Image (cartoon, rainbow, N blue to C red):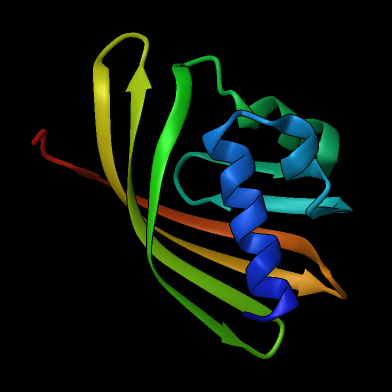
Length: 118
């Protein structure tokens, strides 16, 4: 496994545990997180507020189905479950594109599609 793929897996594990320090350690200071149609964050401080989004309770379950690395990017495809405070369980498929600068993630582009309840 490459260093960058290892970094992405540490980042995802940090989200699974709501471990802010673990997630933030994987990012550049000026990191950008784009979630089309939902939110764009800039910098670690803003990113930190989304690790435990107030609309959700607890930590998400995240299952990575495929990881692809090319040039300065790592792409993860997978599925997950979160718990929305107002609506209950939320199943989703995701595709995250992680762009690297050196050994750290400088940009995350997250594409999330809601799935029907199981």
